[in-house]
Amino acid sequence: SIALREIQRSQPQVVVLMANWSGYLDNRGAKDALNETLEKIADVNPTGKIMLIGSAPQWHPSLPELYVRRGRELTAPSEFELEGLLLRRLRNFDEILNEIAMDNVAISFSSLIDVLCDDEGKCLSAVAEGNRVETLVWDYGHFTELGSIEAVQRLISNGQFATEPDPISTADE
Image (cartoon, rainbow, N blue to C red):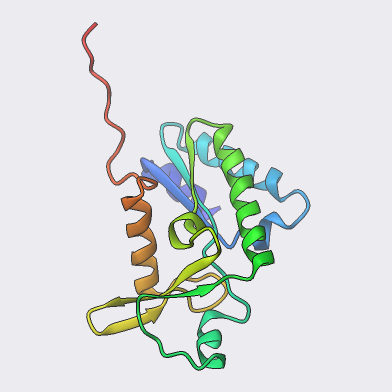
């Protein structure tokens, strides 16, 4: 694939994989297919690390549509609750991804649900920069520009997204 060729050519220190995992992990054999993809990445980039990022919060109908249907103004920061069943589903996908990461030292996992939602399922739904306000996501899981910046900043501030490569130990013996 084009992505694997680019990974092999550039040899990045970290390859970040994020998806709407509910679209993949619901399918039979998807976990095996993801493991196969991770193995291919490791084969072409043996010294690199792989970071799996869990799904973004998802609302049905879409978050912008919820704002309209409920007559809420777009102000930030604000929160919307996730439906209980959907929240459990997203957390289940996070568990699957975490299990995959736990099986391989070169793979890490970070949960967007953990950094964007509380335990009851209230999730950040709008973010602002200056006078500009945007919903966190604009459909089932694609972040807006400000939403993506906020998500990454939260991962970094929670220590889940390394911004610097791991230091090489040079301890004297």
